[in-house]
Image (cartoon, rainbow, N blue to C red):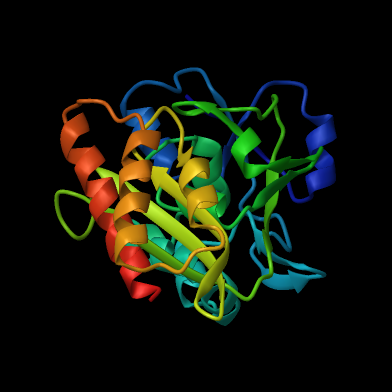
Length: 270
């Protein structure tokens, strides 16, 4: 028999005396349960926490509540305007049933390097806010399915800087739906007069965590995304990732796909 606790306010987290597994949409938890990875776990139902399913402007940021489901993110006018790569990633998650249950907070807490929402958050320079602190996205993940979250530390919202940018997301999987990515790419570009002033590039499923392509970002800064620049950027990006061979794909295929997707996205930005 599983033990369940239900809380109705974030403040109640302080009263928890035992280590809990937070339960909201449950789409990742059910998989772990079936794999026998959560035997003996104590579950804390957070699905009733008020105010954590909102998308709104907070100062210079877009705030996305941790309990916001992917279906709502995919259709949000605010997300489409300021973080369209996240809307595109959300629309690609699983199936309609999963998108209406799975939460962005759960996707982040799960820590999978192939999580669809994570590369956009890297490219957008997002921060993760918990009941205890605020953490830069590139400091949050420490390895496959590992994060810096402490016992009973709960993600409450994600903060995305509000910028006048153009963003893109693409992924490659074995099929168009209900597929875990072989490789995914998110790009955020601030362009003025045809020149890239700022670039954010992140790859999913090509390393132990999502990989931010910082060298490629620096190369693109101050340049116009023309033919030779795009070829060079794709080559640099190919060398920044560290994919492996596994049952989903090969390292060689992932590396080549990453370069192709970057080229394709930069051509869209022309």
